[in-house]
Amino acid sequence: MNKPLVTIVVASFNAEKYILETLESCINQTYQNIEIIIVDDCSNDNSVQIIEQWCDEKKISHPSIPCSLVKSERNSGIPANLNNSLPLIKGKWIKCIGSDDILLPEAISEFIKRLNLYAHWDNIGAVFTYFETFGANVKKSSRYPLSWTRDICKMRASWLKRQLAMLHFNNVAPCAFINRSHFDGFDTSYRLLEDLPLWLKLIEKNAVTLFFDYTTVLYRLHDSQITSLANPKVNNVLINDLKHLNEFRLMRKHYLAYLHHKFNLHCSLKRTVFYRYLKTINPFNLVIRLYESLKQ
Image 1 (cartoon, rainbow, N blue to C red):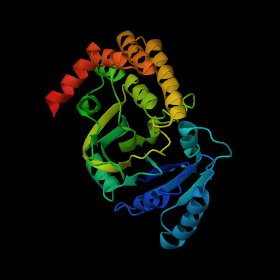
Image 2 (image 1 turned 180 degrees about the horizontal axis):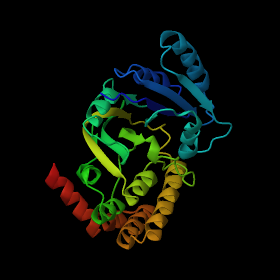
Image 3 (image 1 turned 30 degrees about the vertical axis):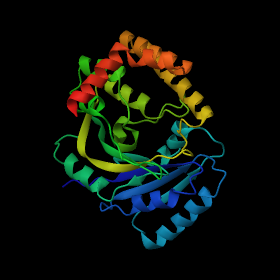
């Protein structure tokens, strides 16, 4: 069996509460041909000190697994922070994870086992799996991605796949494996939205995407996470990123998808019951919800 090096990139920002749990989940993988790169986006808590101490300890306890920390001198956002790892990446495959999430012990070994069923890897741009939510206030875990996105991942490259992905494709960032040969960095014109622009660009380029039917990551939900919509500033930045992404749809001449997302964003910004109702009855939203319900 082919056993390629896998690079785990941990994106850290003010993560002192959870970072050790995340790092331990990464280094305790049953598949040990890995390297771990932690990129810190100018944290102002004790994250950096905790990470540095952890890396020093692992040089002794796990000498065969390289662990390194890249510190940013200024807070630059998720895409730029993740890109700081690029000069250090040696792996054939890249697994990015947030500094508050958990990588399940068999995540990478199962990925490699399933990947070895495919004779040629060069044309595979990304592989997606399930991730499950958890957290102190999560009463019932949810599993993502949902059917629409999951089925698009499985489709062969085609005009239809490009149209459907532009219309709706989300909830895959925590569970993705990226082929290094198809990856030259995240788009730094976005501040928070590192993943979706990359997936859409890969699909636009007709790169193969796969879906492996197992769970790799436990995705922690909490109000202090960097992408929490409980924070109004975060919400505004994310809305701006989504507007920027919609301009990409327009540039690529996906006119229906562009109008669909423009309408949804307009309704979201109004934040009233009436506009929430309008968003609900958007015909494309109705079709997507019907598809999800039929596939349950």
